[in-house]
Image (cartoon, rainbow, N blue to C red):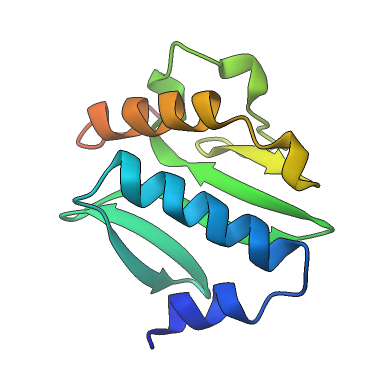
Length: 120
């Protein structure tokens, strides 16, 4: 088992079940993604482009997106938390997971995966 899978399976409940559910959504939505382990958290990549990462922190799951500055749908659902380039969805409970929102954001991340981060 790879370290990213271990990370997910070693989380306490309810986060383990939530991460497994999110993992199914991601891998069904973007079947070509590869699950890697970078910076001590699971990352989904397509080729060499990051799509999103999964992190359990401070009592919630953080799904971070690099290309969020290019997103046009559901931007009001994303948190920046003083981060310049990454924005994320946050889930405290499984009932908060809105599949259509996550799927739309994944499609946007995929569409903008090769764009450079605007630093101005």
